[in-house]
Amino acid sequence: MAMKTREEYFESIRALKLPVYLLGEKVEDTVENPIIRPSLNSVGMTYEIAQKPEYEDLATAISHLSGKRINRFCHIHQSVDDLLKKPRLLRLMGRKTGTCFQRCAGLDAMNTLNAITFEMDAELGTEYHQRYLNFLRIVQEEDLVCDAALTDPKGDRSLSPSQQADPDLYLRVVKKDARGIVVRGCKAHQTGAVNSHWVAVTPTSAMKEEDKDYAVTFVTPTNTRGITYVYGRQSCDTRKLEAGSIDVGNAGFGGHEAYMIFDDVFIPWEHVLMCGEYRFSGRLVEIFANYHRASYGGCKSGMGDVLTGATALMADYNGTAKASHIKDKLQEMVHLNETCYACAIAAACEGSRHSSGGYLVNGLLANVAKLNITRNPIEMCRLAQDIAGAVIGTTPSEQDLAIPEIGDLLRKYLKGVAGVSAEVRMRCIRLIENITMGTGAVAFFTESIHGAGSPQAQKVMIQRYSNFEQKKEFARKIAGIKE
Image 1 (tube, rainbow, N blue to C red):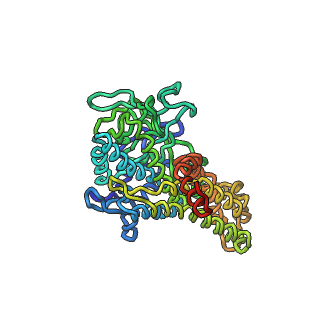
Image 2 (image 1 turned 90 degrees about the horizontal axis):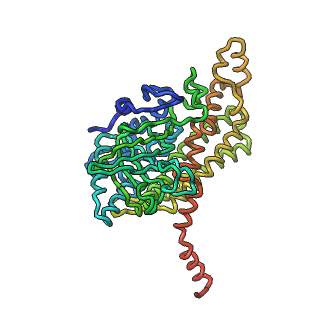
Image 3 (image 1 turned 180 degrees about the vertical axis):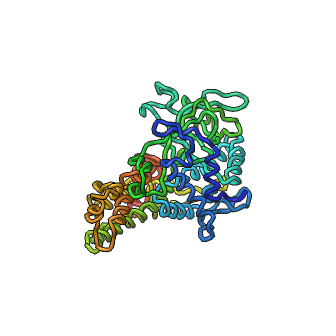
């Protein structure tokens, strides 16, 4: 099957008829729902650019399984060059959508499963890797979106999964028979879940023997019976229900998260990729975290390009672009943004071949990249609001422009420099508001802190990868210190 077009992707999602709840009601058609549709458009862009000849080398790849050209979001990295093309592609996508395009986690999960199932088979003699490859062929042949579901609700964070008062606060296996397994639980904050065809479910952390029922990994279609979706709220999300396009800030694109509730869902054995092998759960999470933390250096720097551009436009519209302190702040935004991207590129350049034939990013540099991203985008948001001014939080609605007795007055008083209309200035204001405070802030601000693990998680991994004993030896030799 040829790679899907944007329109074919939309129709394939409509055909799933997922049970989705939003604002207290069941959604009849997720494709046409005005709150969900912008997020679908963002995923659609991953299909659109794959059809354009000028992006073929970046947005597509040759499958190592079939030898056919496929969407790069379905590809298993086969070289350092593949690792490098990923952050470059993600930055391009961030520039084109200004938000989360929801496919990074699935791409990273598929590459993780390629490695971990190979490792498990090599040590345990299981058949997980072949099951995984069978799934991957489906994804590549049908050009599908795969969601990655790791995060559990977790309940009392001081207790392990098996110690929770409610055993379902981490997704677990509740039944096994000759046909397969039955799972129960919830996966929280699932980016792009409603816009995906399949989901790869994995443990959220390293498990111990007493938690082996929670050491479960599987793949399944998103419309599998027993899975229900509850769409997450975002700041300013109901603006999408209003008339007009200015106040939304980013009218064409968006991201989303959802709670995925698994109510005794049956998974056949051919889709099970881990079941009780708790010793491999931590390794799985480590590989995924490294991939995904490096990914953030691509997508967030693309969004950072959009925010920096909008902020520079606001300086033009306000007549402050020539002020030295404005120039300094814009330069600082560029510095912060490029630092995030540079670490992602470095993690790819220092990547290495895995025994499965796939390629892994450098773990230390991936975690350094993500730790920078827990800080730099937040500072960029502060600088953007500083340069833009208080209008970010006080500008009236575009609907007020239509009121005869005040519309013309607002157009007069919302202007900046001559030659730029109030409407144009308002559009720039709302875009900055969207990225720093509104629905886009989930993708740029909140995800930067918590996505792929909160800051402490990166610090733990940096400590683990740092090899201080080697560094001490470097110093001892130069200083002439003998043990």
